[in-house]
Image (cartoon, rainbow, N blue to C red; front, side):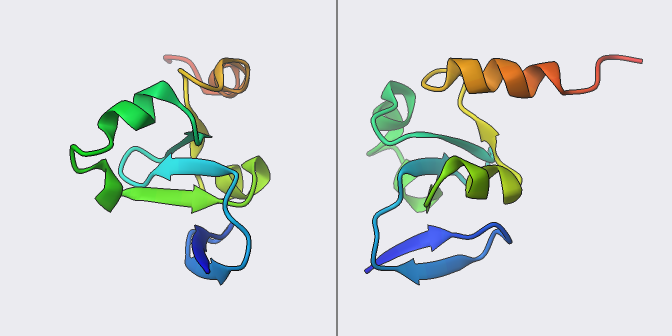
Length: 85
């Protein structure tokens, strides 16, 4: 059994492994092989790491794409953010 985060931001049990990982403090999601996330393992990241079934669920839960491993998605997300007033 795996624990994933749902669109409502709450954990749930799943028979299927998540396809994306996330940082619950920074509310960022990315690929499971992201070099930035892997580098943080062993430095306390394990305690705040969460997993998602897919990108749609991660964004619905209020997470944004990683700027390292998901550059295209990050740029798209960034372009939708309001600029300075």
